[in-house]
Amino acid sequence: MKKFIKVLKYLFPVILALVISFCVLNYRADMPVAELKAKYATAESRFMDLDGMAVHYRDEGNPADKTPVVLLHGTAASLLTWNGWTSALKDEHRVIRLDLPGYGLTGPNPAQDYSMNFYVRFLHDFLEKIDVHRFYLAGNSLGGKIAWEYALAYPGNIKKLILIDAAGYPLSHGKPLAIRLASTPVLKNILLYVTPKFLIEKSLKEVYADDRKVTEQLVEQYYDMACRAGNRAAFVARAGIVDDDDYLKINHIQTLTLILWGESDAWIPVENAYKFEKALPNNRVVIFKNLGHIPQEENPSETIKEVLVFVR
Figure 1: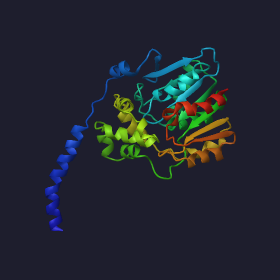
Figure 2: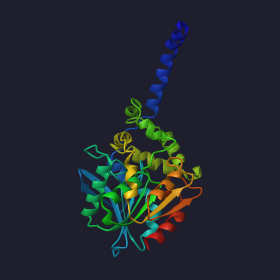
Figure 3: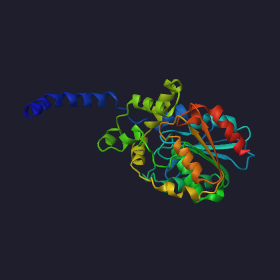
Figure 4: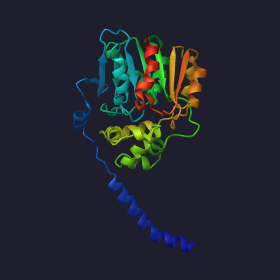
C-alpha cells in the first residue's frame, strides 16, 4: 500500500500536467453571434424577437401553400440539417424551419428553461407570431420529441405528423457519449470551455452510418454552432433534464403519423421505431437501410420521397 501511494505521488503531477495540457490545447472561446451570422445566415434568414431571443428561422417556398411544413432539428443540430429536404419541398410547399432555443444562431434561452413544456409553448408562440395555425410537423431526434409532445398539446393544429428517429422512449443501451459527458459532475463544467473538435467528429460519425459523409466542412459547421455564445451551457442544461416517462402519453396521439428511421441509428435504436408504431394507431413506418440517426441530412434525396407522398 505504501508503495502504491508513493507511485501515485509521482504520477499525480504527470497526470495533472497532461489534463491541463489537454484543456489548454482544446480550449475554445465562445464564437460571437455576429461572426456566425456572417458565415451561416443567408438571404432567407430571418430573426424574430421572442422570449428574449433573436430566433433564427427561414420561411421559404410556395407562399400560396396554406398548410406549410414545419421542421424541427435535433440535439446539437440547427436548421441547416434540413437543407436537402427544403430544396425538394419548396417548389410546391411553404417550408418553415428554425434554430431551436439552445442551438444554432438562436442561442440560449435567457430563462435557462429547456424543458418539454417550454419547447412546446415556445413553438406554439413562434407559429402564432407568423400566423401559422395549421401545418405538417416534422421532427428529428429531440425535434421529434418536441413534435409529438406538441401533437398532444395542440392536436387540432397539426394536419399530419412526421417523426424521424424521434426521442421519447428509454434507450436500451444508455445515452450517447456526448450526453453522458454533459451530465457528469466536474466534466460538464469543463465542457463549457473545452470542446475538443475530435469529439464533434466522433459524434457525427456515430449519427452518420457512412463515415465518408462526415467531411471537414460538416465538422466545422457543427463545431461552430456548438461554440456559439451560450450554446454549450444550454447543451449541459438540457442534458441534465430527465423526462423519460413522457412516452407513456404517446398512445393518446391520434394524428396521422409517418415514422421514418435509419436502420443503423447508433443513438436511438431502430427498435424504438416499432415502439412508436405499436403506440400510434394511425401510422406508416419506413426503415432506411444504411442510414443513421439523422437520415434526412445523410441522404435527403432518398428520405424525402416518402415525405412528398405523405404531404400530398
